[in-house]
Length: 345
Ligand code: CP3
Image 1: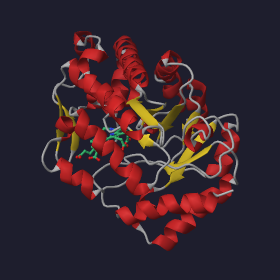
Image 2: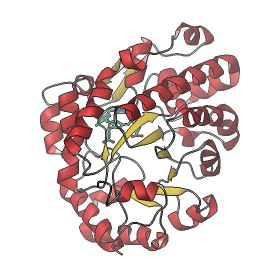
Image 3: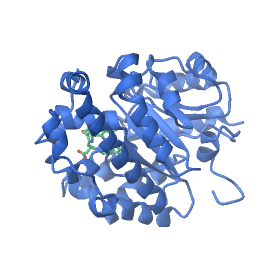
Image 4: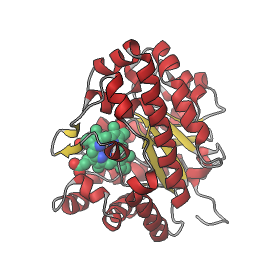
């Protein structure tokens, strides 16, 4: 990268022309990589996140191995919830668990603001170590959970299919919902701004589960808070606004803000981008399941996306969601090569 040749990834965020379509992946580092599993075998996930040297090493693993155009910080959206005292645990196999979920107005009242510099200094230290090690080879993406997705973990106590408790709180206790979402907006903005101050060059806001909502619920109960986060972020740093199952919400997500809107595989990228407007960049949108198929199938699916986008500046190639843990690493390497080869101009 450097001043002479700006990074294709950052150029694409700004909808500037690039020599090829830049690609990075969600869950770029993770259990599909043997070198990650080797580090993870010896310690818990939270412990790994809290060790900046090790977290920096894991962040860098896929950069050389895969040839991606951006690094994504190794951390988690839920790390900022731990200081709330809700009892965060990652259990092997079934993901995050919140031991004292937040389900009533009284539960919300007990929550106190989080001073991120004291609560998650290890995340910011990881950012500094990664930037030093990358020395501008590719930019570093920081990230946080958007308020709704964070709230859904706090209220449900873990992963959920239907988010019934979260939706009930939103409807039956509007005051508590506003207080919770305001608190989470402020924590998120501070968390992201701390990463930017430490050296993150772009940020992704993960609203992974927002696709469960009706457009009206998103507009009234979520959009104002996602907008509040985005408006408080350090100016000049590109923001990727991501969710899944969001076909009916994309225009509202764009209204909430972001330079790049994440698209999952449930939409056709060409017409969806056109409807959304070409004044915003897009990221996506390969089905992660395609990477478990043969290389011929992967190539066909990559070509379909690139053909639909037709070289328009402002497309960042990504999966519609994270790399599945059973994905062969060779397929991920081949994917990155294919995107570069088939999009070279
Ligand atoms: O490479 C990257 O993408 C950066 C690191 C990253 C992780 N989590 C590491 C991780 C990122 C960007 C996240 C974001 C995240 N965390 C999201 C939003 C993205 C998405 O997938 O929708 C969510 C919802 C979480 C919460 C979370 N953390 C869950 C649901 C899980 C369990 C899921 C699973 O795959 O087991 C985690 C744990 C987690 N976060 C792992 C990793 C690599 C697996 C940890 C392990 O067991 O080693």
